[in-house]
Image (cartoon, rainbow, N blue to C red):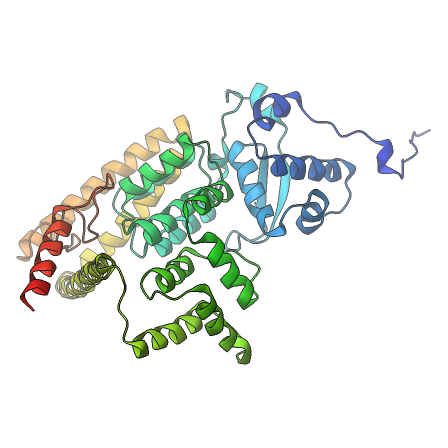
Length: 415
């Protein structure tokens, strides 16, 4: 004899089980549309019925593009996991709903504390570091992987949230050094932000050109949000070139004959019109700022070229140095990986740090013996205080910025 139960075909006859932990610890502080998406998706998961993000978004009246940020938010809170078929492709994943009672009462993790970062595997962590380097336009600094790991484990930040911080600081603040990014991220957390969507909404409220940017994107037929670089370019049309919206829309209309309209194409048209008109920005301070930024950019390019020359010379003369540099990078990654393991990884992280110190000592010895100096491979900066950005880690202007202002003002006065 066996037993069976008749399946109910109408899902309105079922109930969706929602844990009280979710209702009391997570729901009240979450964005309303994220709660609706979570509950509806949970219903389909419990029914074992097929559904996708577009379907969920349409049902709750949310922009489908925000669904990824919705799941990033809930993963950051520790109530879902995103399972990637390919860690290299963050666009394709399935959502697994966490059993909150098991997480809280089956372990020592307190209610409300996220352990999402501990679930990052080696490939996902390595991808985060690569993405950070791409966003910052530089290699990670010596202890930067450890700092990023601490943001993941101690503050419950998601990889998307951290990347948002680096991209914002690179595009808007002209400084993406580790400590400065940390200050920005912690400030966002103190405001209650947990996802890039919340940050974007906050920044849009601060951006006086947001409505104008949206109109430009509609004129180009774009339904997505503008990137930080695209916002910077569009703001330039208003602030530096002095064009009004109608003139910019006229330039946008010129893209109708090309297969792939983009902001850079419109920028080339407006830049050409600007030069032909012989106009200059109405605010001379804006022109001065642009010249200072150009000066810093020239400093960075010059110093980067010098650094490459030094590296080439060192690697040619002391081949062992290159392998030490590669091993230091690998060991630094290992430290951050062990730190994400909590107490279980402390001893392994300590061993890696000892190896790192040994490798650094060996590198310094080899460089000194060859006549280069122990710090020959340190980054080259015209100003070591701000690292050629004009901005200190606390967000204040560096003294070298004021000096550039003085020199450029003198030059203008002598003409």
